[in-house]
Image 1 (cartoon, one colour):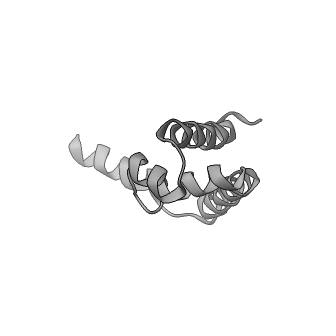
Image 2 (image 1 turned 30 degrees about the vertical axis):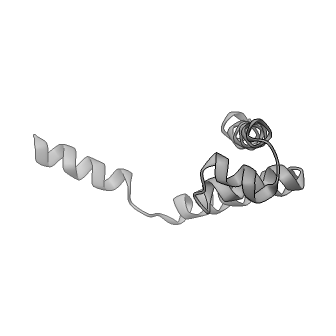
Length: 87
C-alpha cells in the first residue's frame, strides 16, 4: 500500500513540459505584479522575501516606520495572492 502511495506521489511531482510552462508563466506573472508596486513597497517586499531581512531591519534600511514596512509587505502579498484567484 505504501509503495502505491509513494509511486503516486512521484508522478505528482514529475516535471513535464506543461508544468514547466505553467511555472514560468506564474513566475512571470509574479514579476509583473511586483514590478507594478510602488518602489518602496517593492523594496520592502524584496528585502523581506528575497534578502530575508526582519521587518525592523527593513524599516531601518529604508528609513521608514515599522508600520509602513508592514503595510508595504501586506500590499505586496495581497497583490501576489490575487494571481491565485484570477480566471
